[in-house]
Amino acid sequence: MTNEQIIIAGIQILVNLTILFFVLKSNTVVKERLKSQDDINSKMKSFMDIFSVDELRKFVDIRTENMRLNLENHIEKNKREFSKQAEPYIRDVLQKDLDKTVDHMQERYDELCESIYNLLITLPVDKRRQFIYKTHLII
Image 1 (tube, rainbow, N blue to C red):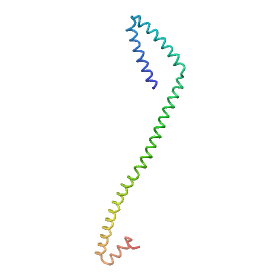
Image 2: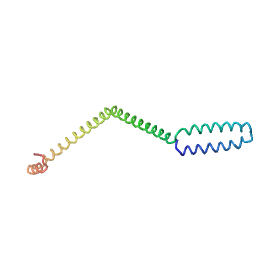
Image 3: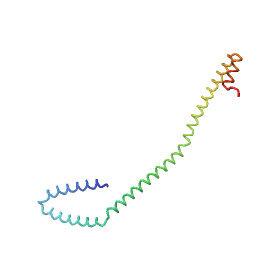
Image 4: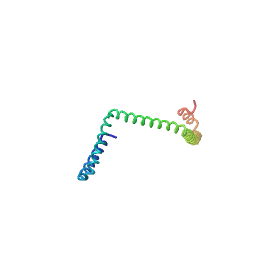
């Protein structure tokens, strides 16, 4: 619990105790119970004085850090397992996409070669040679 939560809980307890005190003040049996409750409260206070608040805070901080580290370790382990399991599926999908792209590019390349061939056929011989040398079609 944070300090704010402890303070709010303390205030709520004080308000409730104040209301209870005024309602039950006239009853003598209740007064005796309150006296015994005061004894219990003083014993609890002396018991709580044994614990150091700083030590308790350190303990809570250590437990919180331990939980955080365990969670990070668990997340990292799950990432590695997911990567191992997902890799074959991802490769398969990527390979299919690559195959489709290569097939498509081959078709486009064939069309381009055919277009260049048709262009060369329509050109006169001297223009054809000039085109071939300018475009580096012959090395």
